[in-house]
Each structure stands twice: as C-alpha cells, then as structure tokens.
Length: 268
Image 1 (cartoon, rainbow, N blue to C red):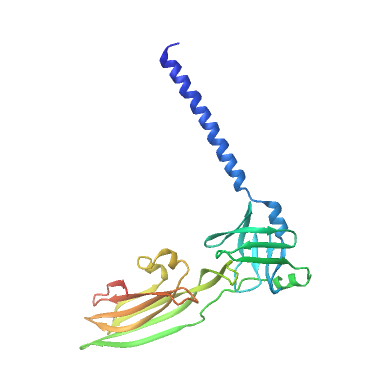
Image 2: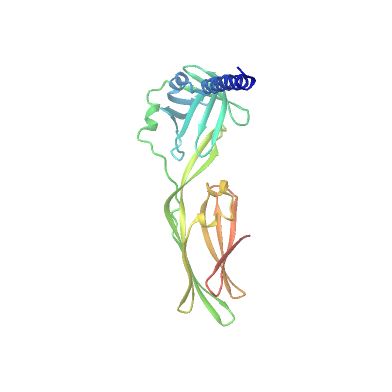
C-alpha cells in the first residue's frame, strides 16, 4: 500500500472519531438541558407568598397563572436548578429549594423569593374561569381643526380609533418575577384638506414608525395619539406619540404634510 492510500485511510478514521466525539458532546449537552418533568409535576398547584400568605399564582401544566387577572399566563420550564419563564422575553432564576410544599428561588435582583403551596382547597377557585383582562384606553378621540398659513387655510382631521391589535408589555412584579399585561393598540385616521382638495388621508399604525422607534421598544408600545400642531412654511405639522403603557417614556415623531400631500417624518 502506497503512502497516499495510508494517508487517506488515516484522515477517514480521524474524521469518524471526530464525528462520534461531536455527537457525544451534543447528546451530553442535550441531556444537561433536558427539562426536569418531575420538578414541574411537583410545582403544580396554588402557591402563596411565604411572607404574607397571599395567593400569588397557580401552576397548571406548562403555565404560571397569576392571581392578578390583569396579567397574562407565562410559559415556564425547570431545567436543572433553574426556573425559566418565557413570554416576550426569556428570564431564568436560580432555584435554591424545591420540595412538595416549598419553592424558593432568587429573583433577577438576587433577592430570595419564598413561596408556599396552599393547603386551602378554596384558593383554587380564585382562578376558575380566569381569562386575562385585555386593557384598552377606551377612548375615541376626534379632532377637527382649521389652521392657516397666510391666505391658505387647511382643514385637519384626526380620529383615534381603539383597535383589536394586542400589545404585550413585559415587566416585573414586586417579587422581581416576569409578568405580562396585554393592551389594545390604536389606529389613527389622519386627513388634511386644502379647501375641497384632499391633500392627505391615511390610517396610521404604530408600524409606520418602525424606522424611527427601536424595535424592542415598538414591540411593547402603542400608538397613543396624533396631535395637530399647525402650519409652518406651507406644510401642515402633526405630532405622533408612541409610548409604552403605564410608563413615563415615549417617542414623539413629527409628521409633516407638504402642499403636494407628501408625508415626511422625523423624531423630535
């Protein structure tokens, strides 16, 4: 057998060994990451705050259902000594104790959270027929203004229409645990006329501001309002507010409609 043939056999055997080694590594890694189904089964039931005894949540199947009806259920898994919650984002907590009646873990701030399984058979009725309440601003806002620029007069009309588009806002409760609230977004109709001539008309959605608002923020935000500012240099100016519900932060975007009916935007 010549040297070339020996070398080919050597490389073939080496590649086989490498493949087996990689497979074992992947298999071992999968085993490490496998969900602890026994721990999940142990967590089923109603749990109370270990400090004050108040009902906090019910674990049912793959979901954690909070006692607060404003909060949506969150998917969970137990992997090793870690509690994983997954909603719009994924958060992991280190479990420090888990028995049939006690569940302790560290929240994202490193503080200890103590939960006790309820032994009150009536606590489960708190969750009967429970569906998360979807919050809506319930405001139909209409604005109808005449704005001028010299001899030119513009008729500007806006209407904020609550929609059925759901927005999920992720936050953390007093225990530092991931929770989610669901809101309805708005669709805002904007019309601009000069006399009988319609310069601009459109239904405006929050997605129309994707170029001006970071995607991570926009995902949890609603299109709150579009206000009428007036006329400057022959163009009608409006301001759109994109904000996260129950938060002091917002993005304000200037909307400029030219005499030709062209829309341009910029962040204020």
